[in-house]
Length: 192
Image 1 (spheres, rainbow, N blue to C red):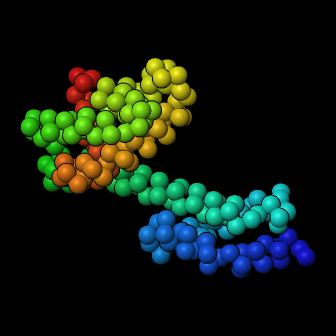
Image 2 (cartoon, one colour; image 1 turned 180 degrees about the horizontal axis):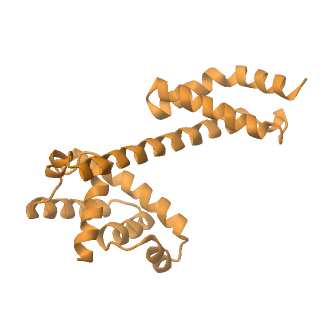
Image 3 (cartoon, rainbow, N blue to C red; image 1 turned 90 degrees about the horizontal axis):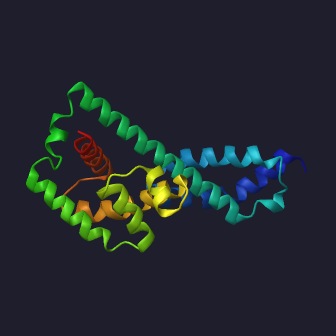
């Protein structure tokens, strides 16, 4: 059996299940189909290096989930780019007004953030406190906690994801993009 025929057989066997994994991960059927296509390309590019026995369901599923994560990151980056562009063009005035810019709102957000930090596991808490409260760079946090900057970035990302939902439920922020803008605003104020 040729490589393309064996790939097609494996793909037909797992395609529907992989599509369901992508739909659950992304919550959108169009994006799931896009992720499924990207998954097929990634698997096909690696197909010549491995035999069919090297591609069990768990590995195919992991590739699909990684593709979905990449797609979500692309969407977030794109949303941040558009938000930044709108603000530069002056169309983001209503967005800026929704930020916690008043001193009272700022204090409320800081108090809630400190309270939520205490609910995080110790390693997440340490990185998040240094990143969000003390406004330290990933490199400085890595030195302080004896971690690699890549580990610090992932830990800060995980802690940010855990903090965004409770902050949004409390009505302090709406989404992760607003939390990013609030943090960057704090960094600018502390730099001045």
